[in-house]
Length: 241
Length: 304
Ligand SMILES: Nc1ncnc2c1ncn2[C@@H]1O[C@H](COP(=O)(O)OP(=O)(O)OP(=O)(O)O)[C@@H](O)[C@H]1O
Ligand SMILES: [Mg+2]
Image (cartoon, rainbow over all chains, first blue to last red; front, side):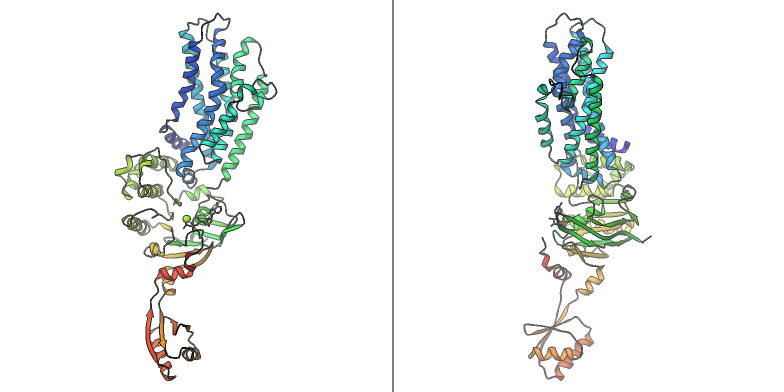
């Protein structure tokens, strides 16, 4: 597993995809800076809600798809799968490492987002103590909620040798996000909507009201992840090259 | 335990009702250079992909180093270096980094990269991104990658694809030296007999998914020896006379063709014909090249 990880890291480091990690935190921070300061009982909660909306609703799901597609792209393009599979490594190992890297990139994105949030908070002169507990829950929750979507996109990206097709699929399903998450019934079940729900359910904790109980969301997320990951892995193990 | 390095048992692949590989029993012994021949579309690549576990056989088994491939895949593949169809590469990495990516998977020593770059004479281009490589350079990189793990068995699917004559010669020499100096067992596929003629010790010929010949290259040469053509005045009578003394001849446009024979036998035939008062106009030996024989075996290669 370690050998596969080191090999994947080399391929990844040399691609420019890692730069995309910065896009969403930067944009969200800029947007939050432009927003005028209001007197708030919970300024950090307010800031998080502002920033997480764009980030969780749009960028996190999009990036999950982009990272998954990219991590398969250089294999599809140069016959890399064929090369890996005639080497003494297990297909399961390759799949797990690839998934791990997608999640790793998303985690980096969340950490940068946290950095951006703290930076904006300081610039705006928020004096209230930083609610680490709430921020941690929101960011970590958003990250965990990306797992089913990342697993789904990885499955699709390994199955389709095209780079654009899985991305297009992802965009098509990300766009109606704003509508779907407003539905209390379907929202939690929608993999593209789960990141923003998880992030905001953490943020709104302080307001005392949110859409879905976190436990329900967590169960749905865990179930979705197990389903998509197992399905993708099973297919990958049998895939003809 | 069998002594074969590669052994397949009625290996069969059917896709969509079409049988691409049909009951193949392929055997390769230690230290052999095996020429795997067949016209385009004969099923060479499909067979090789099954040998490496890239696709699953519909029926039949593959044993490498005496072990079942499906059950001991990773252990077995550690000893195999392979190149299937066209070389794999990561275009955004340099040649050196490509080798490094594979080296990390194999856990080979770092010094191995420079060694294999030297072997395929790619040391100069190693710092350039592979997307800028010519086909020949990619092929060299592919072969360097194959050698990285010091394999005991090489499986090379048309390794000279896209190389110029000098490159072809070089790869051929390389393959020969791998067998000679490093005792590697090598399977090389090609659609040209002449390509493997000079390096193979054994050949297997596949046609429409079936193995139609598998023996030493010498046996193939023997089979393709020339024929004696006799031009006589009364073909029919001559044919009967020969048959009367147990010699099967083929009559074709005023000539008789017999499989190549020793000098004494030819002399005996002439004596026989003269005794039957048949005029012998010409006696010629018709040489058939190995290539022609191969083409005849595969009906001129019209199998796509
Ligand atoms: N996945 C597939 N589905 C259907 N047919 C296939 C598939 N792969 C290969 N074939 C067919 O199988 C036949 C054998 O193909 P294969 O690539 O094994 O031939 P080959 O001997 O390697 O030929 P070449 O010398 O051209 O490389 C061809 O007719 C090809 O069209
Ligand atoms: Mg082929």
